[in-house]
Image 1 (cartoon, one colour):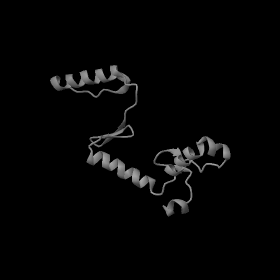
Image 2 (cartoon, one colour):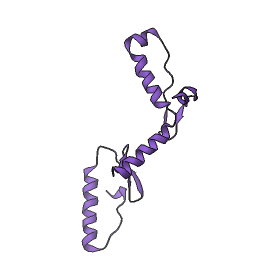
Image 3 (cartoon, one colour):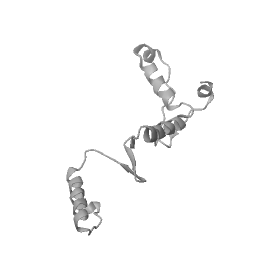
Image 4 (spheres, helix red, strand yellow):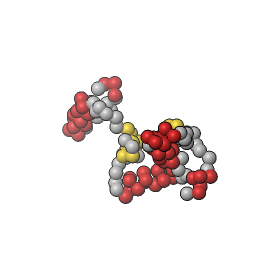
Length: 117
């Protein structure tokens, strides 16, 4: 807890690729309407000492303990890393499925490239 007070604020998180929240400015208006506490909560969550370490522990736990294959829509399957973005192109998925079924029967498999979909 003391380390959070002593440690200097970081401006950027490279692991999350985003700017971190800065300390909120105190004003009577922000205090009375509750914005100060919301801003302070965001600030303390972003500036928490060892934040990246705990995020890593969480990701490892989700993957190995709970067998959850995604971490913030990033998937690791068979040693490959991928990201699923929505909306899903169902036509593309259908064509790949048909191609895979054809490979199973004919044994003549050519890799489908994204531009051939």
